[in-house]
Image 1 (spheres, rainbow, N blue to C red):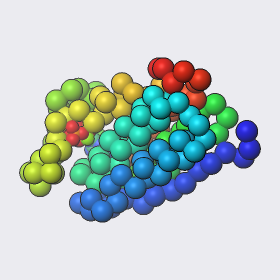
Image 2 (cartoon, rainbow, N blue to C red; image 1 turned 90 degrees about the vertical axis):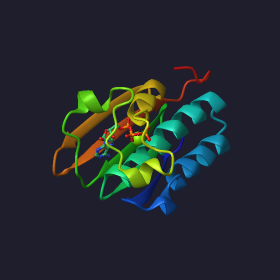
Image 3 (cartoon, rainbow, N blue to C red; image 1 turned 180 degrees about the horizontal axis):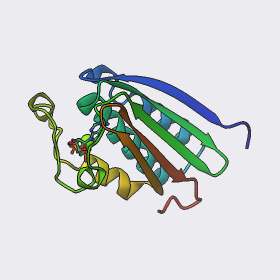
Length: 146
Ligand SMILES: Nc1ncnc2c1ncn2[C@@H]1O[C@H](COP(=O)(O)OP(=O)(O)OP(=O)(O)O)[C@@H](O)[C@H]1O
Ligand SMILES: [Mg+2]
């Protein structure tokens, strides 16, 4: 494999126009590389849920992906407000989504659990008042199974 592929996408709180841009790009990059559909699906779900979380819950941030060696690394970072209790945020159904986001159908409290379910590894670092960083790893295995 060559030097690997990476890309960067800015995200802005409250602005759905950026929603799905990074995850879609990652999806087509992986398809072009001939990655199994199941792996692409898992990577795209993780990237999309993380993008939406920045748009709904945060002020501004970015998605960066890197496909290198035998893994895809997706880093989604933002500038606050941060997550007070990560254990609670990981619980299915827990949400603090504002009304405007619920009107778009978001706010089931399923995004982070869904990322956890689909990622091979997930690390969440968050400092209240400063921001949150998700590091998601998807292994590039031949069969695409987790
Ligand atoms: N980037 C973030 N910054 C601040 N808080 C966040 C962030 N991502 C998640 N959270 C907190 O964790 C909670 C759970 O997130 P999760 O993605 O599971 O559900 P949701 O975004 O509320 O709803 P859904 O993802 O189903 O639309 C959020 O409601 C919010 O309180
Ligand atoms: Mg969410």
